[in-house]
Amino acid sequence: MTIGIVGGGQLGRMMALAGYPLGLDFLFLDRSTDTPAAQVAPTLVGEFTDRKLLRELARRSEVITFDWENVSIESLRALGRSASIAPPLAALAMSQDRVAEKKLFGKLDIPTTHYAAVDSQASLVRALRDIGLPGVLKTRRLGYDGKGQAVVRSIEDAWLAFERLRGSPLIYEEFVPFDYEVSIIGARNRHGEIVVYPLNRNLHRDGILRLTRAPWGAPTLQRRAATHLRRILEHFRYEGVLNIEFFVRGGRLLANETAPRVHNSGHWTIEGAATSQFENHLRAILGLPLGATTARGHAAMINLIGRMPSRNAFIGDDELHWHDYGKTEREGRKLGHITLLERTASRRDARANRLLRRIDSASAR
Image (cartoon, rainbow, N blue to C red):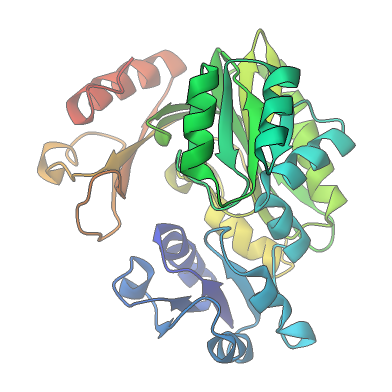
């Protein structure tokens, strides 16, 4: 049985590595074979919008999924009933438009930030008047890892950001002086079975995730986040893994964004949970029973960004797991990650901070 995956990045690679023990095969579609996934599975080479290649991917696959959300909805819809696609395209379309995402949060009674759509100078003036300063001006589409957005602290900032980002539909959001960030990951299969992972606490720098710790011991936040996640999973009759990122302010969750796919903040589940997010995604899209999400201990995941440190300095440590995605080094690029496991949260946090100082001193806290 073959799974077709649109996008051949590290998330696709980790899906394939999780699927081989289940007896699955994989076929990727990407713009080149110089990808992490192409090192572990065959790849069709071409544009993500190439309908001939998408039809071939569908013909050779039991189900099509994707490893990032900025893929062409129109091209996937054009496959019609000839292809089984999961997660559902309605969820993918929602995640591609920040305004549609905010509207869904409101519809499902999920707290989020105040916002306004911005498509003209007049609408920017109204947004600044109604929401105030400071705020964040973002593109509605195609933003990730902090790209396509600007913090606005003055009227001058607002106009400079508008000129830089104009040409794309925009959204203006209130700036939230949050205490910290968390994310929740869960999976639903076509039979309606849902599993939810322990809450993750996340640290970002320059818009890129640097450190995740899980489980994050906040039972009230866990219950609330899981409730919000279940509402979205059930709303879409979802199949696959879904992630929601939240700001935490004064003990209150504010939903920031969703990702209808496996997620960077869930990498710890490979070694740190009974069933990884990657395996549960595959189980979900195939309609198989979902695996337990119990944590095996207290995990931390550190992204390796821009430059790979020498693995020889790390891999001798107990319960330290090294992942190299096989990418060439480039500033701001996710090249790999380290996961560590400890028996207690305090030991995990202390060890993670020591490692982070060795790898990326600017992110250490």
